[in-house]
Length: 287
Image 1 (tube, rainbow, N blue to C red):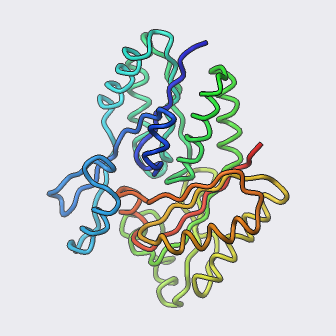
Image 2: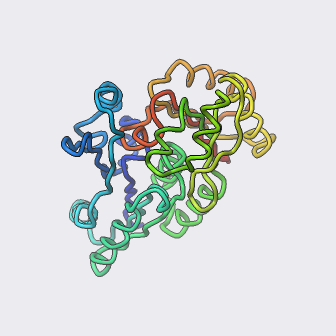
Image 3: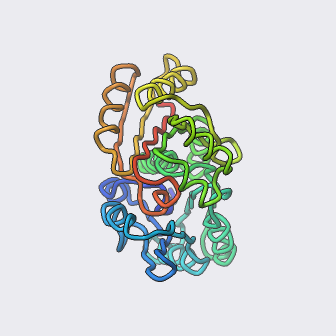
């Protein structure tokens, strides 16, 4: 049996206890404040530190992907540590949102003669990426083959959806992730925007509601429509909105057959694009 390793990036927002428990390798993206201070997401800038720093700057932080060399170094290290039979799944943030997938692809080409690396564009972000990575890592640890893991990964990519609500669209608008018109409409009507990610991996406005409670109700209705009578795994990620995340978790437990649930913090890179107050709900089918 080959040694299967899972690599992802920091935008997956996976809690540290899970990356350690499952042996997931996380490559950090970078966040730069005011074109001066650059940090490695999750390494020398925690979510708490990021949201404390955010109000100190007028401009929205910029983000950047790892270099191909950084990926190449990680792939080489995994081979050295685990042997020549090592096989790697490298699963990343939507290529519509970042060049991370492209950097990993270049690196995989450089090491192709030494190690097998399957680079995957998840077309997801935050814990909708994270939940896929965690489920695949658990599946691999059960002893499944590389081909079986590939099939499982395809199912996870197909079966996972995400809905999120933001306090303001200004971060998405300033970072070019959603049109200015949508930002204007949301602010004028004082509506709570509900967003999702489409099949191409792009953020789009799913719906809107007047107030948080109605927004949550619409999200739960969308999940119910897509996962009727189906056991599910749930991931709730938040940007300094832990109480809201916990309240939603209670509602989900009451409404659905939840096989596992993770509440996690949105890190600096995703936080730079969605802003404080954001809550995201990722859901995938459970067997």
